[in-house]
Length: 372
Ligand SMILES: [Fe+2]
Image (cartoon, rainbow, N blue to C red; front, top):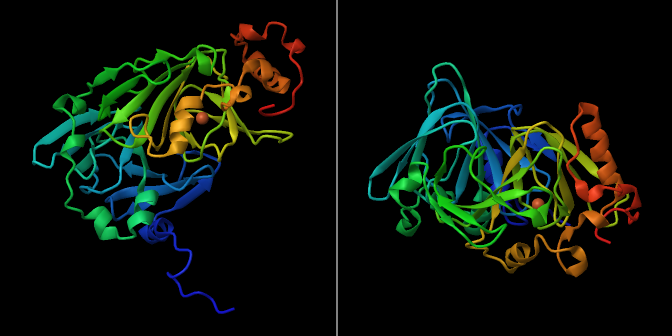
């Protein structure tokens, strides 16, 4: 059989673009973004890298930007959505509305922000001594594979004034939009400190769990912040791939397995790590340290704009028992090894387990791993 000509068969326009950008592309199941090597990225004018986690799907990718002391990025503008999470350092951002009006705000560790779609923005490291490292979650792969035209994506005159939001959205303020536990929204373009932002109880997802959905720049990117208290862990659940999870506070580990697996994969993490469960892969997060764990997650398909029937189902059933057609394993049905591992982990550090559901845990029936 003759080989198909290059660029004519099974093209991935995003991967072709990524290879041409000339920066390292890191792959793995979970990665420490503080540790990944970066290289000068001409597009941004600072060092950077691309990160492809194993559970990456078709829509999303991660960039790392590394700004030197007193450094700044080149101005950027693009027709894909991007959400920035500050891993380390301090700086400022300039966002220019379509009308030319400019917003400037100061960011630091655990700040989260999203310039409205196709607005021009620029990032500055305001420290003269420290570098600043920022993770960018964006839906470039989906957009570039849809249009496969870089000029359309990076030099597009389109404007989206309905997404710009009020001035206060660039000043660390926003609107709380109550829905129900697990779906309450905070609408803004800039969150000064996601590690301390007020969350709301969502006990159905786990002991002491707290949560908020973020609507950033009226976008289709989903984002939520979750917290696990000391001595506790969340319930296992599963959903589609492409949900990138960044640890922003605390230390812990996650277990991953597919239904029917005999064992699970364990990834230990701390702030700066990113991970993403695979397609319908069960995963469960554990706080193994002495302070609350917080993480922020991004994917495509927000609670406001789910985009797909799949995401609508995920939002409807993310905390519903697998035995009732949902995608969550209740504590009483989980493999007993899961709780034992947690008890042993905390015993090493002398941290008390706060999972009173498990008084008499040995009586839990052994159901094997996953969703039965
Ligand atoms: Fe999840």
